[in-house]
Length: 108
Image (cartoon, rainbow, N blue to C red; front, side, top):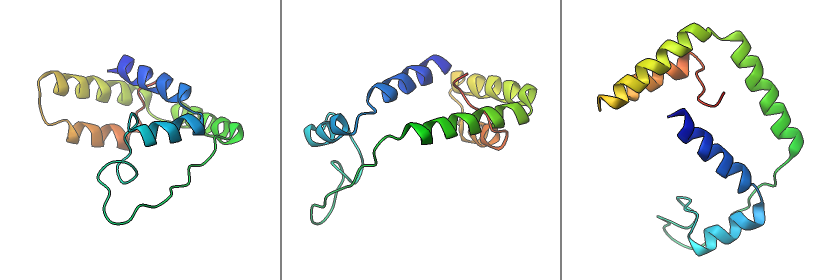
């Protein structure tokens, strides 16, 4: 599961250019609900925000702080429980909620 999230994260980083995102939305190779899929009514222009390095660095700093302050043993156990539930094809929502409450993250 972690590998899948890491792959998705690296894809998002490579797609960080606003112009390529706009082209993707128009070609419908990138799906965004309410923008190019499942829209109702009149068409409207959607403003995409530009990538700012300062904002990204601030978020990384805040994420490191959360990881430092959380109970990492509990997070590790909750992620194992989540994986077990997913493999057993159980309803994973209760496990996801517990992971969220413990500030669990998948990308290390």
